[in-house]
Length: 142
Image 1 (cartoon, rainbow, N blue to C red):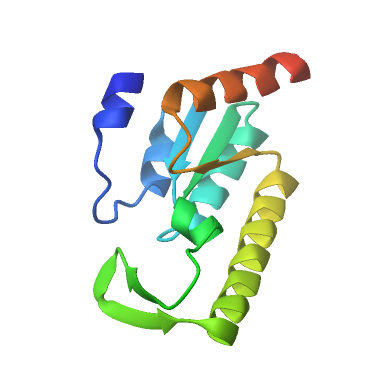
Image 2 (image 1 turned 90 degrees about the vertical axis):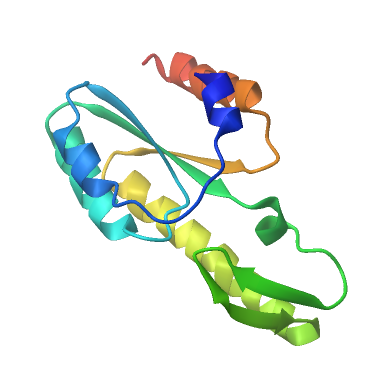
């Protein structure tokens, strides 16, 4: 499974909420950037949690979003490549503040309904991420 994840190139947008809603397993791991249908995914996952299922949302965030390089940067939206913005100086600071606030609010909303939330940067090795998630589960007694 880890090799398959490492070999995957993300592209496009697939609605995840219907997949969460109809999954048969009692433990579901949703790997997502939370950009497309986050509210629907959280709603579907909250219903699963209410039915005594375990749901883990692994929020994948581009390392460049967490730590943008210094200097001027042309930011391109990967899901809408025609959307481009120049980030420099105060624009970068404003963007980083808004992005951090969005990540924190999103994590809080997910945790508030009983869903486990795990943030992962794109430069984190898959085996390390899996061990980290499993370690958290072991500490929680899950």
